[in-house]
Image (cartoon, rainbow, N blue to C red; front, top):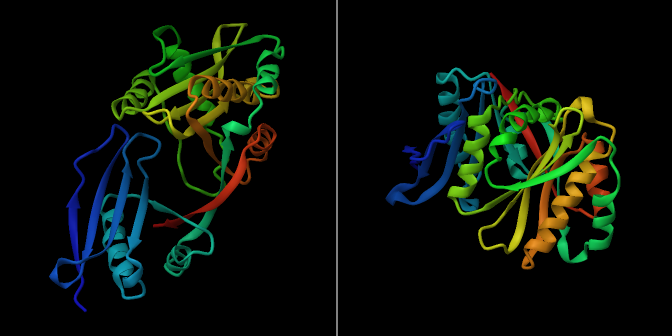
Length: 293
């Protein structure tokens, strides 16, 4: 069987990455699979590529996946990247396929969902109103207010030591422009970004934050984008405090919203304990595999 691998052009680069794409085509132009390669472009992650490869179930084990992978890895090497990562379900054909070609498992994530109808607003308010001496909560929608922009950009380093196990993920460098660009990208697609932050009263800087993205119509499930506390402010219960306020706001502001989604590394026991205590229920696991070049 003759399989053609056709390079495609991705018309939508982002400020932090660009993509390459390939389509596997059978005779008569029937699609058999595709591969997308995300090339990170920001300093600190410009060594990394992320692969998303899919083969139609009817064409699996026919060489389509191998041809797509060969094309993608050739591009990774041409771009001078030192590693490529891919995500799949544990025990899936994807894991078997990638493992047989030199990829190794570097990270396991647990995905969880909080059913909002089952949350207790009184319990959330008790957490939110509990004293946290030396700190206060603030919240905003969309782009960070100008007065907080600099300290919010600095606070993003709270994610630098987020458990990523053996993944060569690099360090994401944030400045005010990148913070604003990220918020504007969410706004452009019509979704709603809500941020809750803890302010240190000692110097009025942001000690930690949590972000939630709600679908444009306010229905279905919202997605947590990140929760982090700077190392010097840990041990004060700020993550649970901020997340409880984010849940409270979501419950009160979006009556048709059904749930909140999050994913956490299995090795991040602290955040998993917070999620469990707040009522998040595990739904599935995903693994990250990495090939070092």
